[in-house]
Image (cartoon, rainbow, N blue to C red; front, side):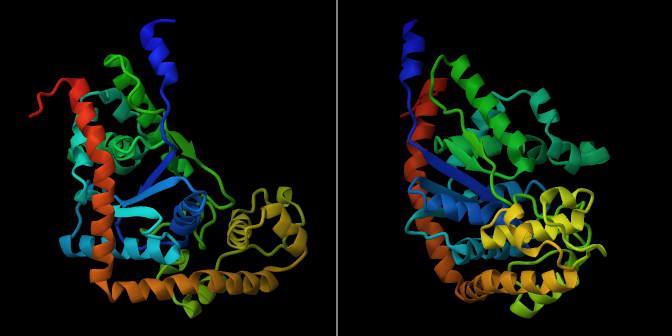
Length: 346
């Protein structure tokens, strides 16, 4: 074994979790079950957790400045109301920590054009109009890699649709390490788990629940009050058949699968356990059960979010403290990166 191989074998990284959500407005049940609730779970596992409002990513498409500020605070309020404790997790908005953008430039020079062109989300978002898309939208996977690696994060909780970006992060880390003959950046692991990591529309079980859907009845917003939550679930699209007793019975029944999946996630049960209890029931019986459960779990979150949004100075103070804590970790990692690359530093 060579000296370089021996040093790489001996390298260990402190377990650390990083993830973020774009503050593009309208937190939904999908954001909560697919991401934020898992953020809280990982906070409670005793690993250092760093959670970000990725406002630099948000501006890869046009954002109204006043709306972006409001949406950043709303996302922070959602984090806190859902159970993220600023005393236990580092919470901040990305633009307050310039090391993200600085490391992203290094990674722009490491990543290859072909890698970016293969990104599914680039193809989806740019579509046939790619020549008019922003350079930031094309290059943002390199910024996402910087978001993760500026903290030497070892684990990233993500939905299935973001797994490709974590794989690209690993590719960038591997190429950097190989090119500079170091073992400086970790091979970050995506964490994809949970009963309802992909929550679907209440109006079309084949489509992901989205804040961009023109129908507000297609989603449960985390700002919805108890009556609105209940009404949306009761009016959710379903089929005419009774619920099955086993998960195989949900095949080709996307709306039924979605509602059972949501119930399972909110009740901390598996879908099989839910169906063992409710198999044979009509949706006229099951929907009120789901509505009651959803209100019990979500209404307190929306109430606390509303309180926090009336105290923006409280939110801003939390984000400011979080940014200072984040920079304390990020700055030495960026400085060492510059040294490895060969930058002259005073």
